[in-house]
Picture (cartoon, rainbow, N blue to C red):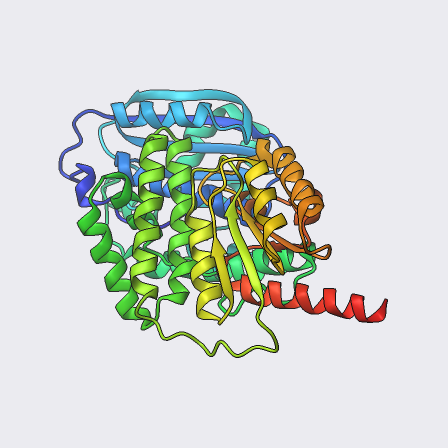
Length: 431
């Protein structure tokens, strides 16, 4: 979990303990959680708690959760409502719920204590709890309120559990992202999907992703654009922002919706704003040489019925910059898509689901779309690439829906399609 100060904008002032409440609960994970899943849970809790001025600590041990939450009583109630609706755990039991005179964990929006994450020693935000704490919880889980107090930071204990100052959020968050994603997520995804290299840029979400998502749902378009421009100036080029800002921010918007922090309309509006920003920035980027062995055409389209077009827009910009001839369309039905591939020769078809929502229930529909497009295509060896959040967050492979390749980020579509066409041509030559 992230080791941060509570945001001044949250309304929490260290000297104003009025209306504080503390809730301690325990629950059981529905399935064992990997290091990457624990980190994702941490980021979600961090963003949610920051908005509600909530501080605390979470302990995970052998599929069991123990969490201490503290903050304004109405904020604690909203967070607990979100927690009760989280499908990743069950058997939720509140062990303590009472007014509080002061914060015990005032310097942590949320911090994770666990012995089960191999990356725990790589981040100051994920720490290994003392063995006596684990033994006490295993022997007396109902005593968690008294046991978790042992995890209170030493300076807080010495000063009567008042908040102490810590460093900025950015460096610590970036450290976790770098360690967890590079050491755990990317190798697992590469092995799973048979991709030796997921793209020219590593998947390193920027530490200000959550800030951008908050600005987008707050309808503060000016502030959001100023943040994007600031990060663009830091990077010096637009392309890294696709994988480390826009795509992670899209997923953060989806998480905010899942937490009831915004509406689906807010998510769609935020995605449209990022899409516009990406196109404005890429318009000023120099295009690579379009010289290829032969002109190759790619049809880029969201799944028919998909309103979220950020993924398709980012893929189009990347392919255009790489010298392809991309054609982006937004067919409302499978029949319209089939007419497109039947009337024009395409070397590849790039179909995307939402970059914000998981859309797991759409996979059968996507399977039918791809099968119908293959049947109708003028190109009998059409290369099909799929992308979207469902393929990033889960063990879903493009092969499961009839695709040839799976895109984890827009930055890899150039390499993926090149590889797919080369393999198709090699197979045709061998035949």
